[in-house]
Length: 479
Image (tube, rainbow, N blue to C red; front, side, top):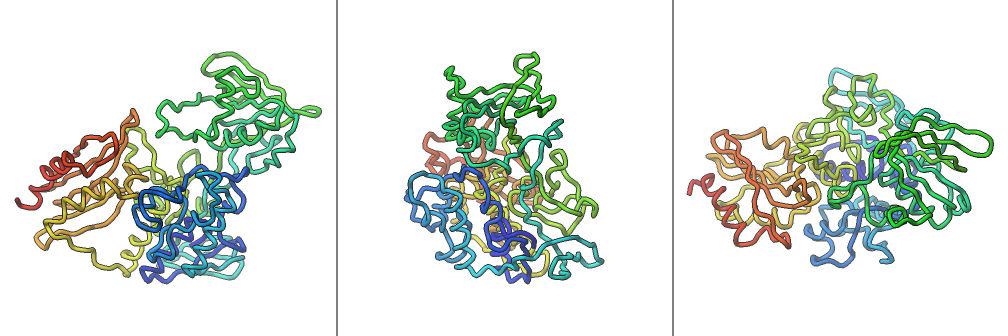
């Protein structure tokens, strides 16, 4: 494995629990990955509620703590809240980093720091990774590289401007006119941080800001004060829909040439600073030359439902790069795999998948017939994996002559294609933002999809939901 960010640490943790021999390599000198540097203004976008309706450290509490890594032992769980000062419901970057460091110490995650991965070679029985510490041979390789390499979207002249990663202290922009290219989280994070300092902020990108359905929006409300300034007619910030033609530097400043999209017409912006906040790409090094296919303008490796390269079997990915396995994307809903709250579950599923593939698997737990319906109702109402990875992960139960088996949490895209008799429980979201429970029932090899009723308080274990689940599952129980 390569990478000591949260994705690498989480995957290594679960590989150890399955007894899979592995080496976790990292160029860094300490754990944390990108959280040792980003976000630049320190406050994360994912929330953690130190006190919640469920006790800290329980499985149900995970739905209220979107930043801690998962642990098998109670002392390994819910570590980030203990570092938060409660000034915000989202941790700062140093608080997140401290939580990750405590996880490594408590769980005794072994990392070979200061070990730089240089190249990769395919072998008959796996791969060889050449590193600054020598060669490592393996049957499978997991790259938890993050999506951390600056990407400028191919904008002409972007090289003369700064990228998000180069952003200086907020005070260094005092009295300046700043153009920020990009209107997603990184762009609005910068705008929010610079608003008290810059003379004027201009955020530019082709697509308009859309958050009419907040749950489906890529933005977070706490970043949107600059947008509020704009829509109310304030002079502190402008939010413009325009395609970037080019960036030019001249004299003491910059000129950004654009063409309006929502309202056609050429627009030109003169500024003291230009910051390109167009995102990142995965630092794949020589993996594309090995045959690893990419997606998203070449920024992210294309992956199977189990986060394996679609073109080079045996190469897997962990962490926020697992967004390269998009899932079903029903009604356009993306996974949460770009955030810790989502990819921590991907890592646990991946570790079990690798363990089974490499011969370290263990039997699945059996279920008694009378427990199946209550079990599914609880999962629909409380399973954090289903609520955080909506329409992406599912609880899978199979029915056979030998009994009923809890197959665990698995990618929904995968479970819809396997088995003769089974049910998969998922939580999904409609195009209007409505959250509802869903069951996918396979009987006699024929699959049927069932959207259950939503509920105003998300009580998906209500009496009405019990009736719906019973009607669908009873035939599989032979009753």
